[in-house]
Length: 382
Image 1 (cartoon, rainbow, N blue to C red):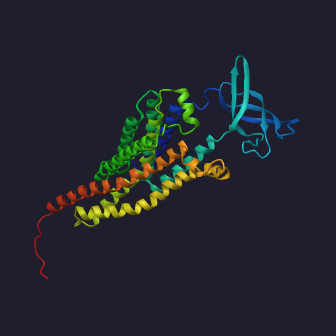
Image 2: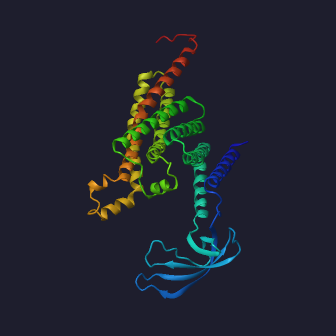
Image 3: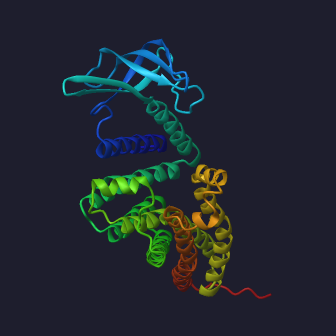
């Protein structure tokens, strides 16, 4: 099989795995009350709320999937001028609709604009771009990513809901993800083994830091409405353990990135400079790691800040109600700060560990190669 066919097979296989994962975790795309429908007609009602200026529309929906596929059902839709929740419906638009039979009465409505088909399209474009630019390595990275999603959503989520202890389960899942991911990316090589050792050590240290911080700060794990709702649905869930599990998973990517960068760099250095001993290789790894820290710290902080930008603006607007002393003592703010610090902690300590292991293994390999070199047949006299 030539390379283009291999790439195609990898891409198709990866996409099939992704779709299988989605169906496994969330069920079919038209299960229950939700289904796709096409807007056939929109008629504005004469009544308008004088206070809110809310408009009422009578909308005919032709269902294209689900138990009511092929049927046209009527519903009411409400729009408020200037609201971000308006759907701006037009005839011919596909929407995610609701049709639910409750005690003999059919309840219909419009839930959301239908986005998943376009989301899948742009995702496929990105996957093809990665495959085209990075070649086989890009396809391998996608397959490794799909495996990671399967482990987290398909394995971890179900075992956590079954009552498994979050922290040991997450450490095992991280070890599994790291092993498979690095095996796919680097193969069964010294480079992969060194990166794996650095990753596992860094992630465990990040989890230990998160656990100690949670105990010291008396974090309960109640970081938002979703945790409260989860506790109501399943009272056996250990929310503090779940918080630490999230810290471990969050640190995994950054730690793995640092470990593989140092391992790969030391491998190239050992090839280019066979005379480097263990000490020089370790110093080179530390120098590389120091440069990585500068960029990765910025990357991690910006990632968390970008995800919380709306919240930051909300606090800024209501600074009288949310002074700094209040914000810094809020549970979910403390949890996010601990999450960032734990990732940095694991990433920073993974650098000397990976550098030390890499220097030891690569120096041993170089020494063995030197011992196998044959004696020269002649001596050059200068």
